[in-house]
Length: 389
Ligand code: PLP
Image 1: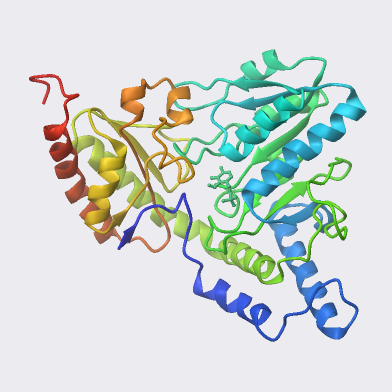
Image 2: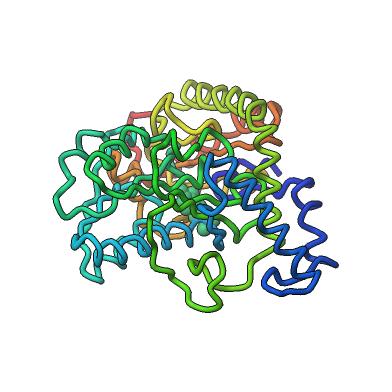
């Protein structure tokens, strides 16, 4: 199989699996227990917290382990909004129209609780403008949430600049860094953020574990009540093996991400330029340069994304159309609509996301296969106007 869906998830690196295994075996202690097995587990969790904090340029106490990116986003938005409404007497939240559903749907839930949410538009490359944030801020704004990089089109947002605008107004700033953490610099001070969501499974770690960075002084209401773990912010016995996996993958990325990124970027550039050259009526979606190193996302006129996926899959090529969480639904992606693509074009989307194990040979195979697939689908399509091919 040629796996080009790393934006959806990645294979756990063998070194990460090896680090986790003892905690699924003999080291099965509950970190909240006072015996030696419990102590060992506690020490392991706290070491992992230090490692994740170090990667963020944060203090260990500012890292809350969660069940992944979705939970981190929900804890950040709902947790902060509910506290800030009481404290600051405001109920206005600003986010962007292209956020992951973990943020967007948390926003819809907050709207049902009476919060007022502004969804900032983006330009045709998917960039949120700093001026639009400035104009949207109001006296009753309590929270801004803008993602670091978009999972569908790869665009990287100017987070430090956006956060500076929010800071100037005294407003708490959250960023969803699920697609960037571990792969590009995510120092919380350089990004100037108060809250940051991250996840292990996009960077060769296990699924179902992540963290939320919470700057000292920012208060959150927990989503889950119980034994008061994670400084009362996330009750429940810690996922020790998962947390170890997260820390191990963070450490691995700190050593290898630079060189891996260089290789991935070179393959990605070859893929993009070849696809655009070989396939007529193809367009790159997302920013041409300010984009994730592994992301090649396109729209092809007169083609159904789902059909493309099936034909690619029949050749052993795993790809996706829009995000993993939305594929399967017939609605075109909210991200592609937000960058101004008409419905019929947005339906023809293809996202190829590369990873450290992809080879040039694999990319060549895809470059070889894709033009034929697109031609075949266009030949069958009733959408193609006569004489356009
Ligand atoms: N945010 C972004 C930008 C993502 O790409 C994803 C994963 O698809 C998530 C949040 C959700 O993360 P998780 O799968 O760890 O819940």
